[in-house]
Image 1 (cartoon, rainbow, N blue to C red):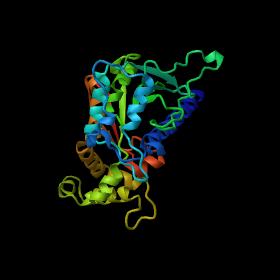
Image 2 (cartoon, rainbow, N blue to C red):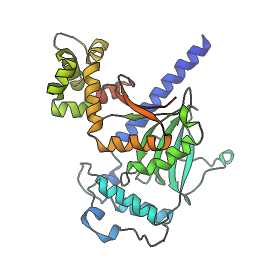
Image 3 (cartoon, one colour):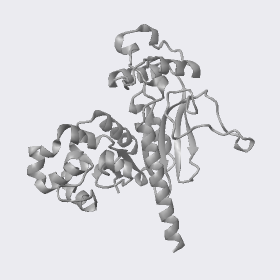
Image 4 (cartoon, one colour):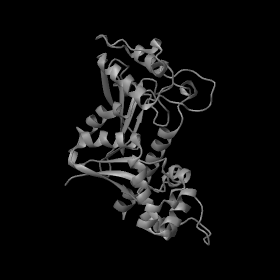
Length: 314
């Protein structure tokens, strides 16, 4: 039926959108931001923000954020640690720097990107006159391109249901910098109708690095067959005696993979911080890890399809 075809088309578009957002979030920042963090971590006063009630201008804000990530010839990505990012955000807030939340409708019509900018950054309101926001969802923040003035992004999917996901933050700032974006998005709908998603792109690597399919607690709780299937998922290779890594393996791995995914989340402060950010705004509800919630091929390699989903309390 036409309605079913339209729904399927929308779902495919949303899956592709989530994949694009996820790839942008996990990509390295542009070369201008690929560097070792010094500044606050080393006690260099050159990057300290004056917090004596003096709001930063848009240019000063960008300068401070960029200065916090020093230039380096290294190709390895070394970003500010959690404490340094939290300190930077606290200093911005204490300075009284005004910020605003801009909605950016995705061309598909299925989602809105919420953008955090300095309140005095350029605005793009006269679309009829060609005054179009240059934001590019595929581009990282922290460079000098289309997203130069953006310091945090959040995606609000609106069709066929409401869900928030894709929180992406300037590499000098903590996840909580996106809290006001969650508030702005939630204000447009009833909180009890809004879900949230947090991707787990490091799950497979975490399982591989620790060879966690051998974990005694997991083996006792889930059994050897499920553990063996989880090993195949983590390694992205067929089980012994199988020619492909297919649905049968993912189904067999479910019990062990959910056990490992919950352990991974519990051990990851960054993920827990992001999940708490959503829950603080959305209120009553629970976080659960769902198996094969996102079957985008690239995400299957990164997380075996597991996704943390916040479901509001009925």
